Length: 354
Image (cartoon, rainbow, N blue to C red; front, side):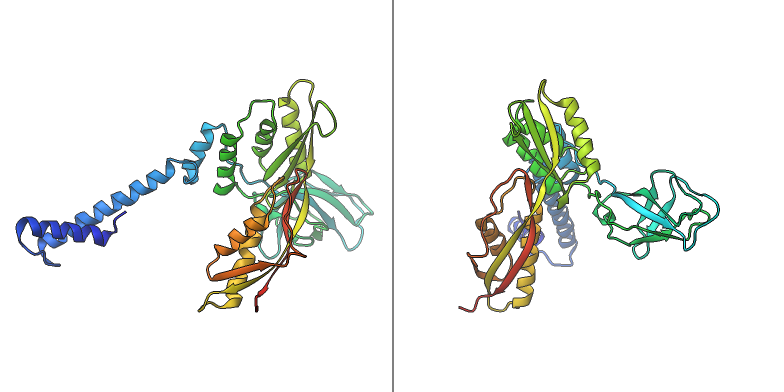
């Protein structure tokens, strides 16, 4: 596509060739040509953008969602996290203290909000009670660590402290374009016929909170289907497993026993040495390499493999890398396993001095 300057230059030269009059920068015709060149360039940019939205591989945002709808696929929404908090007193109270459903809590630093999803009572003589909570909002940022919830936004009368004694889990971000595009392309490459593995995989991956899924046919014998699921970058929550199980139980084939299970996380360790191109800082390039490797492994889902050739491609596409070598005794290919998903373990990148 021509740049703005190329379009203006072409118009100016054409005008001069037809009229024999040179176009001055600040002349009336010069200003008119610049304005017209700007409009032509803006239209060309818009046409290029429209071309990208015509194909699944290059479309994005709402236009990618339209391609997905043609395949019966919708973008997964963000999901809340779940867990428990403990309401407590320093000394036991002589009367029961009611903790209503909908009591709002928050983290002390980021002020992420949570609410109780059940009513409870701290009985007279007791000093603490545990209550189930969920986040007010969805996303992985709500998967807070132990002890982060400590603020009572709407404190129950008489309660002195609140704290989560275990991390909260289950929060997933809204599905990215990368993940949605992958599902659409898979639906084209492996069409569902309502009886094959692609059928169960498509249903499972369409449930909010599921990042990826893999299907094992006849894993427990004839007439059985095992579906392994994971969240984005972590294990699926019990609530998500139960939800997928409920949906598949109603949409399974006749006389087929479907069982949904959590895929297990398996660490992938990477040890490599790199050389950087002249003029580049080694520490900066190394940090980018580690980040790119980690992001690539995180993009892999249940049943995906992580091969050294794939890692090499990721590293060579990192600006500043000249060459690389693996420590073969420590780094191997992570073969596809439908019961597991890869997560980054030790990613060690050192300088190649040979």
